[in-house]
Image (cartoon, rainbow, N blue to C red; front, top):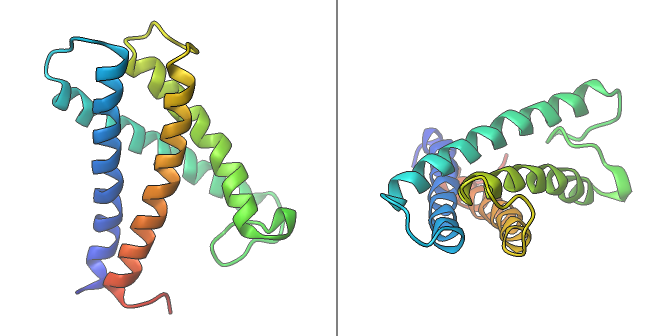
Length: 145
């Protein structure tokens, strides 16, 4: 397969995962919603937009903060780039999924009993879709180098 399919495949995996998760969130927070799949697709698109925008802002901050970054653009704090990735992007994703919990719940449950576990589940989903997307994209292009 062509290298041109790697990025669309990565984003398609994330979009489908986010759509299904937002659909489940709509069912969990709000018992009756009109056109839940259509709304979940919109919420997933909003979540992906937030992720791309804030993720690029964080990468820009890393590149401008005059710290050593590896070729992925992530500094090696805490002894490894993996820990930096998990901590910095984990906090950012918790913020993003908190906003999504507020929106998906119909703007009435900012930090309720259901919002916090749903937010943590969204953070885990984000990391899972990253690794599945990366593995799929690498398989499509036949390796990193």
